Length: 249
Image (spheres, rainbow, N blue to C red):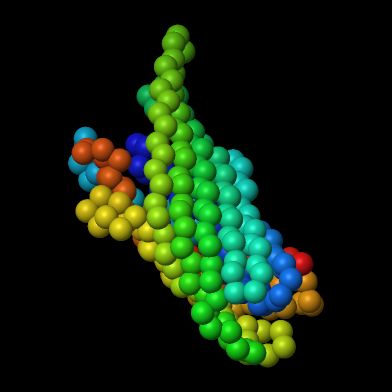
């Protein structure tokens, strides 16, 4: 697997933005929430490299089988109409294969970090509905290790890739009952459709167990286009259901 394909698998494990967990109420004092969640996606698209443009087609089992470790969490603080969102993600993936009657072993390892910082402003706030706009930056930091070994010798190659995108988005929510609510968001980043552009959309339902704890069930779609070099382009779509839990304070 070449670096763009492995990066695609890493992106599949990335979490949804803080909007998915629900919008905290507008208060005069500081309030906040912390969220942990998991995304179970499929990946479709293509990668362009020196050997052409093979398709990327990874199902949920393919992604999970390559996952060694992952941490996905987001944190939000709010006071009155203003909010601050921070999202930190770390994913560690690996894959091993053997060729020529187990005489040659090929291994790949990928570490993906995504860090997002954005400011939000509440433009609409009523008893059962709220809407925020948000803007900030998203930073990707990835590393790839590729190794090939025989009975007598081996070789390992490492490479690093990082980039950052400015993002703008809109998120909102509406309460249906005392326990159930609907939440959603959409944002876009990169703003260079020829070489660097990403956008995503999410919709889901929240269930409030009590004043502090919420559960989330939703569906997220993410599209990523990134041209690392003249001969290496990643163009993929990632989509699937997600579940999460939120603590409010």
